[in-house]
Image (cartoon, rainbow, N blue to C red; front, top):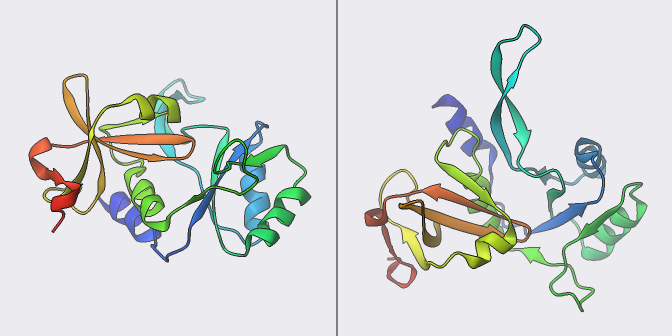
Length: 190
């Protein structure tokens, strides 16, 4: 429980939008360090995985959910961010609004705030999906009015005879198990 509270306390909704940066290298930690050195906040969704230790016993460690994606908070103007991207010694690209557009896609702060809350590694009933898988899931826009996920919004989808709250951001989607009785249609939010 203390870890969950710590994770929530670290996530601040300061009104800043985020960029999704796709990596074409296996050096995710180095790229993240590069952005941090340039004064930018980064977020990488992580989950616990069981690995065998040197003593042969299994233990849990945190690992990134995807190795080719980093979310970077918009701290400066787009021109300055483009300069940082160009100065990188790594092959990376920022997701764009469309294939034809040169304009970077910005993830609104409310959407990214909820996504980061839902990526808490302490939550066990959670699934990560690719953007394509998330788009194929049929569901209704809902707002969670009761329970531990109170205040979150997303799509209510069904998977393996269970209900999940799905939140999508460019590049990835996350689903948390939720009781459908805790949810109300998004338009009935109040």
